[in-house]
Amino acid sequence: MRILILTDSYPPETRSSSHLMKEMADGLRERGHEVFIVTSLPAVHANEHVLPNVSREDGISVIRVRVLPHHNVGFILKGVSQLLLPFLFFHQAKKHIKGKLDIVWVHSPPLPLTITAQLVKKSYGAKYFLNLHDFFPQNAIDLGILRNGPLIRFFQNMERRAYANSDVIVTPSEAHKRFMHEKRGVPLEKIHVVPHWIDVGPFEKAERTGRFRTLYGLEGKFIFVFGGVLGPSQGLDLFIRIAEKMREHKDITFLFVGEGSEKKRLMDIVRDRGLDNVIFKPFVSKEEYPLLLKDADVGILSLTNANTTPAVPAKLVGYMAASLPVLAFLHEGSEGIGIVRDSHCGCAAVSNDEAQMLACTEKMYKERESFGVYGTNGFRYVLRYFAKDVCLNKIQELFSMAILWQKKS
Image (cartoon, rainbow, N blue to C red; front, side, top):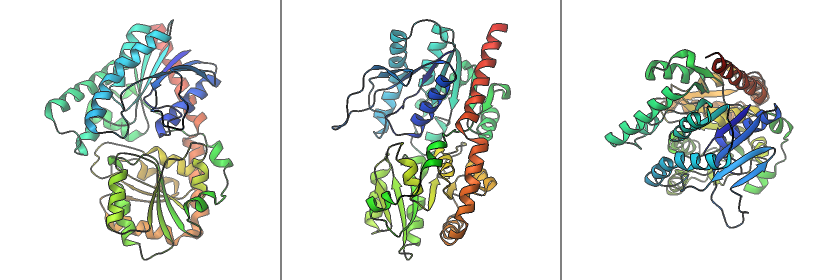
């Protein structure tokens, strides 16, 4: 098959979505498919080489599109940039991809990229797969980011068209599937569940070296680590408040490794409260990330209770693949709470119950002798449900069924 993947993030960008799409592209290529990527051209920093607009990378044709900044920028600039994305992406796809496409797969968010998928479907005769990870604009409404009535209706209409025009919708959890059916009226037969996948190999091979403890000056510390985007939906103030309540434990450090629109505000809170048990560091590379997790004691993640839509943070699967015990503060609609509890890989609390969150944190701090069991439980759960090959086999089956339906129709 000839398959086009549309994603706003792709390596060398260090985002969970970029890694997911890279692993998907590699896996499909290994299965004998011809794979194209259309993605954003990342911003160039002083010490980085300039990426070509079109390149051949690991047997995959990658087309990078010059766009306005849309990560770690103000909401107005982000909105304008995302509205331009679909047309810039489609223009470059038409310029560089000739012949028929069998499948167009779009990773959303950002929601406007679904317009590109619709255009590709019409122009190339491709089956349109919508890989939906979050519900926009509802998540922005929940967080108070989107308040303008006409703008809300504009994006709600875009959302409805995205669902209606897609041939298959792939969501990461059963909770997503239920929400789509019950709240958005999408037929159940159109929705298929394929969870966030992960290549467990690098995590299984990585060993605890102490390099990051030395690099960050955290030798002898009990490290709660967060790795990823520091954005508004995470509600990472939750961990700042917990850190403040546990500051008498001088060996505890809350380590946040990543970037995002909330980073400066969180750093200001930590500084203003004089918390010396919370530190922030920049993103580490995909290759170094497993080593970072191996040097930590507990992996942490959160989603503010303002969220009303389902969500399963991808970093949860990374922690489990690294055999790292998990501490999760998630809203009631997240299937992540059930995953942590079903797998017995750590402790999970609802993110509007501060007493329960504090109790969970103290439990993880005191139960170090159980960390081996928690880690093994999480790793086995990942192998069973989230391993890359398990998930990509499901995706390939969906592709084959879609092509078969097309031939019969």
